[in-house]
Image (cartoon, rainbow, N blue to C red; front, top):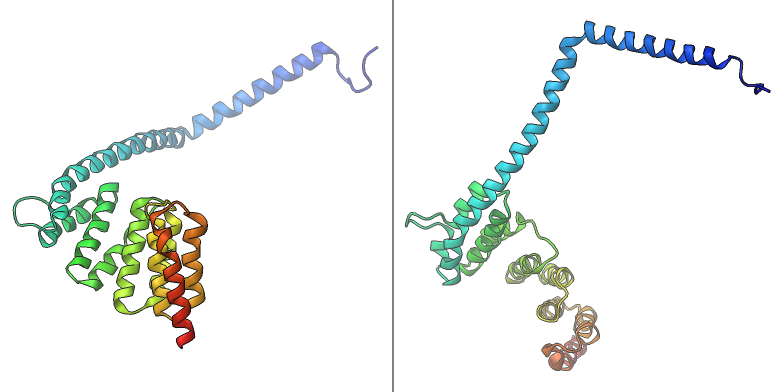
Length: 235
């Protein structure tokens, strides 16, 4: 017995589906015939986008390679402590500032910012150091923590101890290893003390004991805490 919902026989339903397909096909063909220029334009646009994306990726890879090659000899100059030459030499090789200008969007160009900021700091050009390090794109790694610590050192040099302490705390969070974080926490504590924020200083020192108990710096923590408490009572 046929279902009460079946109002057409099977041949009728098949014929109806075929009729709908023919109608839909006719409408699609009519649209294409009337708008062929638009259709071809859209297809051409898609091709351009795909090829353009591939070309952009290739260009970026080429830029990254060239930046790394330009930065390599400058890093040696920087490591030797020849900071003025590292920033911009007159010996035919690109300095850090030129690498930043030409390849600033690449990883090597970003690293050049960090090195340039450190060079400015060592040359006691603190305003330039701060402007350069603020443009550095810091990640959650050793370089990112180093950048935050360098920024903290600049503020400490300026006498803005609260800001310096906060940045040192950030550095400890960005790269929480026993090789670097304990020193950042000590630096933070020192600046909290300089800002008369003794409770925060003690908390920073205690974090070394709690989170990095096997670090060498742990041995000095009681002395730092005692100093902070003594200074607190003296005020």
